[in-house]
Amino acid sequence: MGIIYENLRSCVETVRRKTDFQPRVALVLGSGLGGYGDTIRIEEEISYREIEGFPVSTIEGHKGRFLFGYEGEVPVVVMQGRVHYYEGYSMEEVVRPIRLMGLLGAETLFLTNASGGVNREFRPGDLMLIRDQISSFVPSPLIGSNEETLGPRFPDMSAVYDEAYREEIRKTAARLGISLREGVYLQFSGPAYETPAEICMARALGADAVGMSTACEAVAARHMGMKVCGISCITNMASGIEKQPLSHEEVKETADRMGGVFQQLIKESIRTIGRT
Ligand code: HPA
Image (cartoon, rainbow, N blue to C red; front, side, top):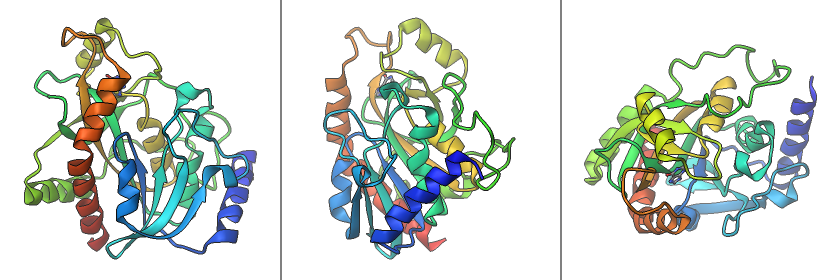
């Protein structure tokens, strides 16, 4: 057993000293979704700081805790705040919380984020169901000696985002009257926003949206056999599409404005997925 697994075991033990909660779905909350945590029936709360060797977000306003509770009847573990590669953590550290949630029993990982729209048909405020991803611009979280206890050395990535879940989410959105785009998410490292030339490249490569998270988390989850789904909030048009420069303020503003609708879609999607 390698060092990665030993560290994870100790994280699991820390959590297990506090709760024996068995989550089924693990949810990562992106920008604008912080309020979602208040809408579930919370059983336990664990701050990342309480877990030794755990990465803690350096960005102001990111909470940094796990919530254990119920979305309807579905037992969930929710990550309120994630860490990003650009904060200086290694990819192994960035995905540690994902692996921990998997080891706690979560079979499904539900990813959310804010992203820049690369597809010219998109508009700020659109929600995009993630169909596939490009993670080739950031290091793989699987680099290093392989943890056979987690998954295989060369895991298959031909269906990262579960097709059956995608269909459930499409139906849920239709039922709620929420229009939903669909596309490919590309992860850059950030923290600078992209140049117009980088966005042209992303589009030529088949990306519909770009961001600074998520794809590495999906890789780690698939490695260990979790099922994955994801929704992105297009908070702004990516660099070079519109005249005004990109700003974190615009991203936050759109994410907050869409928070209510985004939350509703996630809530109902988890309840639907929980019935399957
Ligand atoms: N680029 C990268 N990450 C982002 C963007 C963007 O335009 N918007 C929100 N997150």
